[in-house]
Image 1 (cartoon, helix red, strand yellow):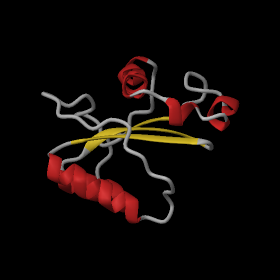
Image 2 (cartoon, one colour):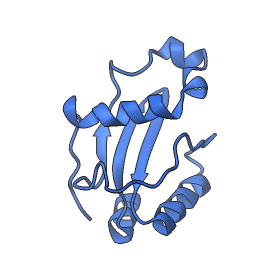
Image 3 (tube, one colour):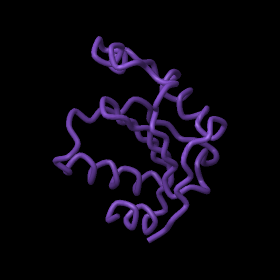
Image 4 (spheres, one colour):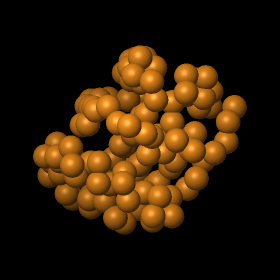
Length: 115
């Protein structure tokens, strides 16, 4: 809940793909605020081995209407055995971006709630 309040305050939107064995997050907003959010995530001891897969400027937000779109990544992303064999570490920026580009079309859980 604290992260949601901070994201709302800082103008951060995005999407979250999570499952027991994988956690991917797309953050978007003003660059200084995105950097601060990333630093806050890095300080949080619940997050280990943080890696930025894609970092680029875009003309408009992909998830601007969502506080944080959530998708449980139940079937369409790598299998658990693929994760265990290093699929995430081998993923290209285009592959990661592709996962997020498909989110709105596959029925992700829309979390528009604000603090």
